[in-house]
Amino acid sequence: MPQYILSFDQGTTSSRAIIFDQAGSIISIAQKEFTQLYPQPGWVEHDANEIWGTQLAVAVEAVSKAGLKATDIAAIGITNQRETTVVWDKETGIPVHNAIVWQDRRTADFCDQLKVKAGKLIQEKTGLIVDAYFSATKIRWILDNVEGARKKAQEGKLAFGTIDTWLVWKLTRGQVHATDISNASRTMLFNIHTCSWDEELLKLMDVPAAMLPTVRSSSEVYGQTDAQILAAQIPIAGIAGDQQAALFGQMCTEPGMVKNTYGTGCFMLMNIGDKPILSKNNLVTTIAWKIDGKVQYALEGSIFIGGAVVQWLRDGLGIIKNSSEIEELAKSVPDNGGVYLVPAFAGLGAPYWDQHARGTMVGVTRGTTSAHLARAALESIALQTMDVLTAMQADAGKPIKELRVDGGATANDLMLQIQANVLQATVIRPQITETTAIGAAYLAGLAVGFWKNIDEIKKQWKLNKSFSPNGTDAAPLTKGWQKAIKAAKAWAEE
Image (tube, rainbow, N blue to C red; front, side, top):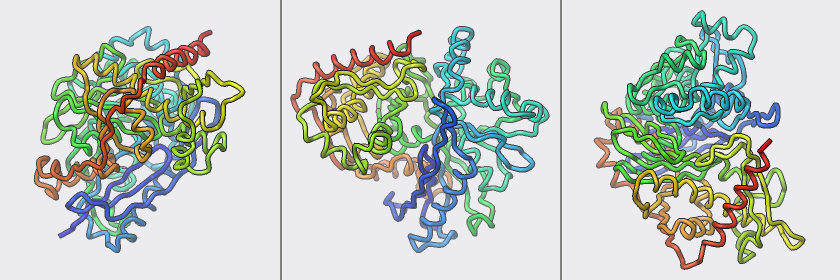
């Protein structure tokens, strides 16, 4: 009997494959970065075929590294960068345009008009705040700007998918065109109350229904891999958008539990149970998952630039050679020296939702060093998270005492201590911080009986380290941050 689950973790900057055993332990990992395309300022694209190529390559590598055969894999779980939009020809399987990435701002002006015209309607139906971040306006842009695309779409010849859908299509050689409910809820076309594509929204966005994938639950068998692709027919049995997968991987299965993932962006989600509560504080309401016919909802705050600010210091400014160096550099100064960095490189997400804001550095003096800048960068991640948590507490009507954290940047103890200080809450890091990948693995494993139930999985969650507020007065830091946010927003004003 197959003893392992293979998780596809398709992220914004790299494709990864991780193999887990029944104890939830990592057996092998393979990772490959792919090209980021910036055709114009504010535009971000990926080559969908390159994503597929890298994802397939790391899957094969992970299996081989573990000394396994494809027949040892019980199921595949998929988790993916959300909202990134691929439109392809159903007959040839060739994308009609590069994938438009969630960070892309090309439809910001259209979104401004849409917000005035139908912002309230869209939020009531989808739980989302109108923004270029979500998929709908990206699809519309492709149909309006690629020659012949709209005509083909109306004739039912084009398919749309978020990255999960694209991977399932490729894995099954075009036999399955499906998404899961968590990814569907990020398109701005899906009604989270009726749990179906919404005709009124499709009309508003001018998107033909024939392009859309079938929406399924987050834990079920969607289809089998084509035997020629992975040398075996493996059930594809779990799908969730990366942040929902992380919420599940962190075992935030009870209402009120909160996690924050520190990846390219930062994403905080709170499980709110089986009823969608609309935020009054500029957060979005999203579907967390659907398992055994039951839908769970979450409140979410999205920060567009989290760990990516460290990549920018490395690649853009050359201040560090490796991301891991930032902690020592930031520790070499006692504070930020009055310097604040607002990394609004792709606008500001929750709770500000200012699409036109841009990255701003304030408080720079002749005495400012690269160490101050490194510290300000780490603080920017923690302070943006604080802004989201404040909004979430207001929506929940009660203080949040504990935050479960995961993602690459959580290896940084200094950042997590700053986080605990500014939140005045306990920050908890689990032993396995690959919670996105393990969440997808759990969803797939549940569907094929690899794990009996959620209670069995809960026993696998283990603490690595917790960070409590250490008595540092965070008030001056947060006050300075609020002034810096004002500066970033002022820059964007006409």
